[in-house]
Length: 132
Image (cartoon, rainbow, N blue to C red; front, side, top):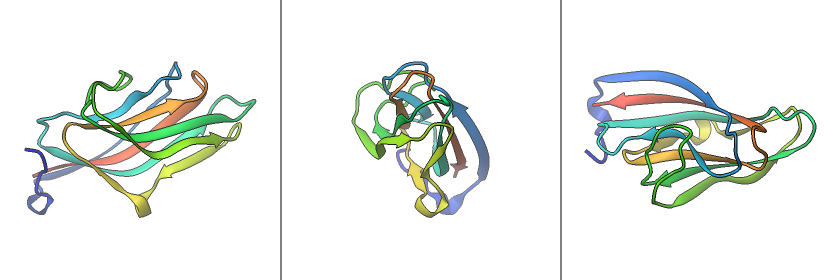
């Protein structure tokens, strides 16, 4: 099922998860498996600079094809940036997505993250898993 019908919802489960990449290459923050039967409504993504001494660049993208485990490199597909190389000041946060700019993450897609400094940004994502 490539695009679940959210009119016939059987469950909505709210979840918050987080990840601090230990490298500077793109990794998956949130995967939605190809045959999950789910659509994820992304309510908020926050990039918090945990470096404490200097600004760190942050990128958040929607990635087509590449719904692999959190922390893994995306496989195949294309990255479509939501925010691209935004400098997050030391000990500060940037809101990449909030409820006014919510995103639906379809099956077989992922949210990926990239940090300019290893272990410099913690990404937190709040979303609803919707099943029909």
